[in-house]
Length: 332
Image (cartoon, rainbow, N blue to C red; front, side, top):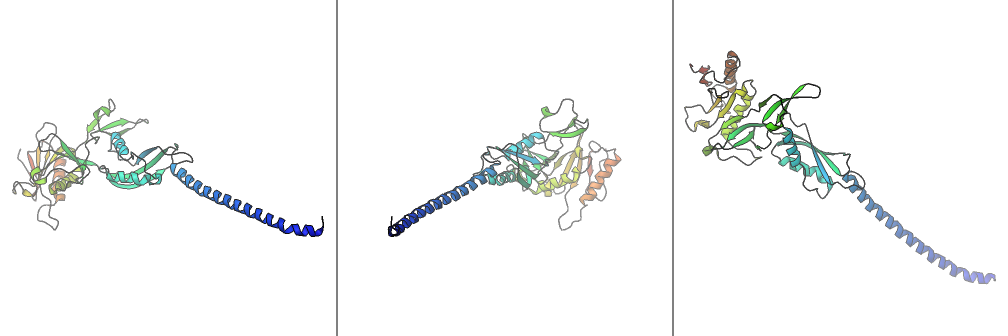
């Protein structure tokens, strides 16, 4: 082979090599794009797996836990609330799960305020655990229906609460260390055999349904001036050791609507079937000031009377009248 022939063949060989190099580069470029694309898709899949709780595991159930459930709340009520805060269907994006639980908690009639909702790690990769911290509405009073066949349960602010699984009894339950603690129960049959118990005390509030209207739906506040003042009086009395002797707060003559000369608010103290003692409270002062005896002074009359009668209020007198500059009592 002559050098000339070699020189003549060299340009053709170089072009072929160049073409082959271009093909290789194009192939590698395509492979690189494919790898990057697959990597991005993989990252999205990995993000989904992390949100699910573990790589390759999808969440199929939700467990809601309540922190700081108050002692007055029966276990049956805690279970009810947890169940009501558990979404029946997982949200499209699992990272929205805390928001979904929050919305359920905010709408629950027992929840006064949602403090926090957070998701925590779970030993079971298929279960999402959400912890809810909240403030709860404590039932305070029962309002009988006009025909007396049923009652409406309200908290201290007048919000209507469900009657189902509300606390009804408090029992002394012995712990593993031998100590006794008070436990609330919604059902008598749930009380451990032999445990001493008492009924949860609810004030009975009497209203004039013609004037005050029908009760609201569960979870709504009853906008009623008579109920507001009755609950205000209930809050005053509930701090006293003799609160359990006061059974009824009568607000039917609120603002003197039935008889301006009679007490606007009165209470009844009674034990079992003994005679009742009527406590004539009157009304609360007007916000801008008033000439009537202050609520604090009225309560001081009751405190002193109960102290002088060995802790007894119910059945001591036919009536106690707190509306004057000194306590007035019946002569019997």
